[in-house]
Image 1 (cartoon, rainbow, N blue to C red):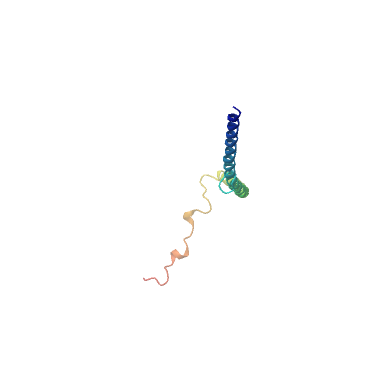
Image 2 (cartoon, rainbow, N blue to C red):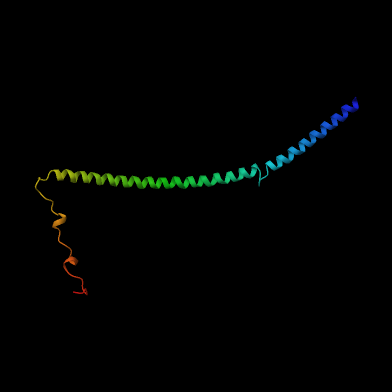
Length: 121
């Protein structure tokens, strides 16, 4: 009976050793820097660095665009105020009065009055 117990104990030890050997190989492949999870972690780390730089550039561009938009908005508000004042002053004019310059009252350009030189007559 002791012989059978020793044989089963030795077989169990050999099975456990084989199982540890297989696990060791799998773990070494798992943590391999080129193909395993280690490589994936390295690639993801590089991508995070690239995304951080891109995000910083995007934030800088957004700040510049915001400043530009704020300047343009301020200018547009100033122009709108001037237009409102002009429109209010137009309401004060008498009904029959005409503006000082109308598109139809402008003199025609000189090049319309004189024919082109060298043109056949």
